[in-house]
Image 1 (cartoon, rainbow, N blue to C red):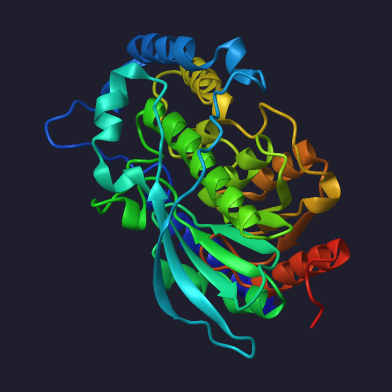
Image 2: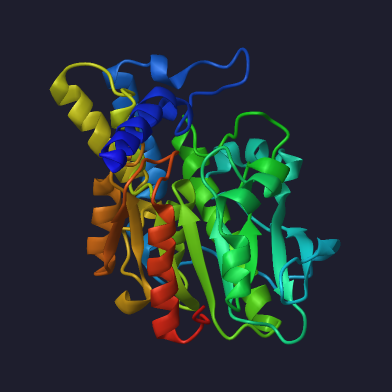
Length: 356
């Protein structure tokens, strides 16, 4: 009875505020609204974008659509000692994000956002030799370190022997001077380039942690971070484990759920298919996983109304990995502790997680 009431409350909360959390419409003053276009104009614009991104060579492993990261020489700021029974240090890491957009027509505008040109992460490191590490990737409109330290079980992971990193996605938190992030957004080019940049910066952080001695570096992500985590696992075979949590799986699905398509049902279907094709090149489904199924765990909330369980189920099927569900919703994640215990069991089986 109590679980049913909590699930209902979580579902209602997701419905009430979910529209403001994913793919929120935002544009500078004076700029035309692309969503005001009719069906024919939309299809023409999407077809042009598809010619830019949905090219066969972009799916070739050797093409370089997802460019390899340059060696990382970060700036490091000590934040505080790490609390708990094991001594350690909390550090803020920043480094140049050496990213170049593929779409030339937005290159100058994309790169003009100076804050986004600096990648960032907060590290929770044990004293002494490097430990296995978990990179945690936040959701949409999040990424502020104080918030993320409360959302994620950082201390729990740290106490069980992991070094931990809170990664900041492009155009979020310290990488943005704006209240509303530009990524992902109404312009599919910015969305695609944002995922390319997220993968580049995540790979740079994986390299840094491995170079300092972490024998295994895995990634967990929530919502938009779950999508980014899933995408990374199809690009980089150095990722030791992958845990998408309440993940987004399809940009086009979210746009459809938010009522972003116009016209007749047939016209809306065609717009959905064309937008899905535009984003295919940055989809976790476009490439096979480079992480073994036994090192992947997908977590979903049963009453999630923002990224419903179907998103997680499709990813689990693609990765041939188990799907664990917990009661609650996308925002009010009741029962999430059970889900993280499942993470602990997987990492314990892998031998990189201390059982406590």
